[in-house]
Structures are given as C-alpha cells and as structure tokens.
Amino acid sequence: MLALTRKKGQSIMIADDIEIVVISITQDQVKLGIRAPREIPVNRKEIYLAIAESNREAKEAAAAAASAANSSKPGLFQKLKDLL
Amino acid sequence: MKIESVIFGELEINEDTIITFKGGIPGFSEEKYVIIEDEENKVFFWIQSIENPIVVLPLINARFFVEEYVPIINNPLFSETSEEDMAIYNIVKVTDNIEELTVNLKGPIVIDTKEKKGMQVVSDGDFSVKHQLFTGKSKKEAN
Image 1 (cartoon, rainbow over the protein chains, first blue to last red):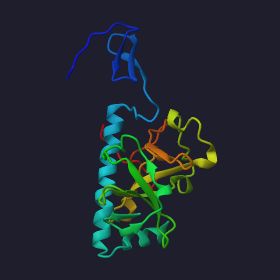
Image 2: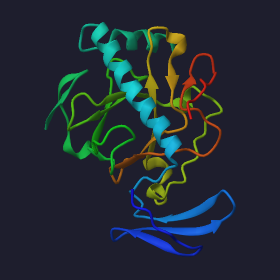
Image 3: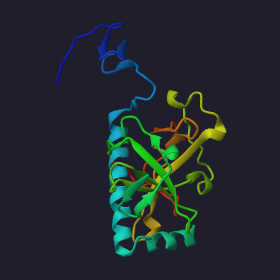
C-alpha cells in the first residue's frame, strides 16, 4: 500500500479526477473530503463489504431456489408471491 | 439482442433498456444490467447482468411492503433525476424458510430510467442490510 503524509487542508490526487482532502484531524479521527466524478461510488468500507456480502448471498440463494424448482421458472417465487 | 440468464435461459432484450452501473455493484464488477419483470409474478423483479449469465438477483419494491421505509437518496449521481424517472428496488435473499427471507433496505438499487444509469447506493437512516420482511426484524449485521 502506498503511504503518503499529508497535513490538514492538503490533498492527494488519484488519476486526473479524484481528489481526497484532509478536512480535519483530531486525536483518533480524520475527516476526509472526496471530490470524484459522480458516477464513481464512494462508500465507507464496512458498509460496502456488508452490502457486497449480502449481494453475493442473494445471488447464491436465488440460484439455489431456481435450481431446486428444477425449471426455468422458480417455484419458490410463486410461493412467495402468494404470501406477499 | 439476445442475452443468457442462468435463471431465465435465453432472453431477448431491447438495447434501449440496458442500465449502466459504473464500477459495478458491490460484489460484482459487471456494469451493464437489465431489469426483468417476471410476467407471471408481478411482485418480483430481477436485475440481470447482460455480460454474465450467473449474475442475476431478485428484487422487490420494499416501499410497498415496509410502510416506514423511505430511503434517503442523496447521491450526486441522481441530483438531477426527477421523481418520476427514479426507480428504486431492494435486493432480496430468499430462503427455504420463508420467514427468514431478508431484504436489503440499507443499500437500494437506484435507477435513472431516463438516463439509463444506476447505482447501488447507501441510504442514510437506520436501515438494515438484512431486514426480515415477514417478521419486521433486522438480523444482526456483521461489521
């Protein structure tokens, strides 16, 4: 991992269009500002990882339900629809 | 054009309906998707990668089931999207035990249907990644 030392108010550039600014520093927290093209997703890592895990689980569960139904139309979803 | 889906087999899709998710969605690097409405089953929708047949996830409109659910979408990608052009879906994890079915309220799939662009955003507010749809409980999240 590349490590760069920066002071409050200073920035780093990633490629041509992403800027990360150190806004403030306290004893154990740093506040960062991120300037990036708006189509670039920017998230706190722990939330990103929780959503990524949830997405992968949802994909696996749907594939398992579909193959259990042993047809192209997953029967489980019909059951669920009846409940909803 | 024709695409392949591990769940639906071969599908004929209209190229105008392809939505671009720049950078993919968390866990999947594929960027081009279509939303499939299950004709026989109007409750579920599917987000299907047009590039990778195995990337297909079921969706619902959680707002119709969870009364208090109002996601807060303040992502700049949608700052110019009007309300009628904005579609919001939530990814569902199905289980054999239907009571344990969970829906991701924290990270809705948001689409600008006019601009054909989408992103799985993180909603502000106290929402769960694994909300149990039938019991209203939120599973403890690993973080």
